[in-house]
Length: 149
Image (cartoon, rainbow, N blue to C red; front, side, top):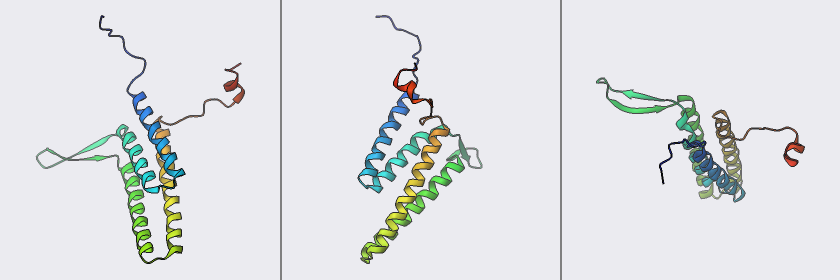
């Protein structure tokens, strides 16, 4: 069998989209199971899979040697803000549980849920901006049903 040098019409982007689709499916399951820890974990995995498209900045020492790398400031700052707020809510929820303050646990859990929703929406918006999320393609549903006729 001869080696075929013809390029595939697909590229590695298909693998990324397939991987992201799998993680997004897990997110839906996490939400349905009220598993906010796994929801947050899977949101982090989506973010890590999409942030590679943004430029990085090398941090150099006085001798010009690379000592660190910074990712896009805007994305990393927003991501860090979400994560620090989530950690604070988790800590506050644990404290309220130890104090057996059920009303406070419910209030804080609802606030954590709202924050995770914001993080989820933000990440999906990032995916859309990077052309990794669904786009509306057809406004006439009859075309989808009847193959465009």
